[in-house]
Image: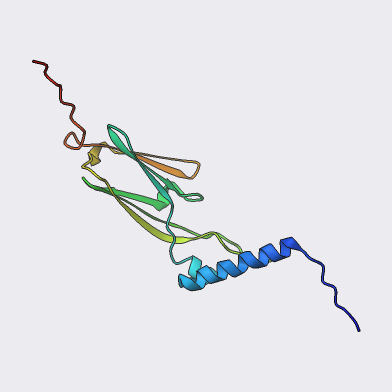
Length: 149
């Protein structure tokens, strides 16, 4: 009676489990793992912070050029759009994984109050786009002094 002995390899098992979970999520959300699907669309992560005087929006846009990013702002919303292009040369290369997302994106952020779009400022450093939009005077909280009698 011959017995097959299989050596336990926890790393192989974890990798296999990760790939199975990825496949499950891809199937559930209707995504495929091919390069062409990943080039269709992506959504950069953002943070929206509020101070007493302004709203500060930070967007993760690694690997993008300033020229590929467009900003549009109104009294109550900011739209960030653009396209991250996949620059690759296939000669002599084999891709085993392509997990970075490429393609066009569009994010619109609604502000809880009115802003002054003409005074907005944007900076782009280390793949992070930071936009500071001052609140309009109508949106700033008013402090009321209490009169003692």
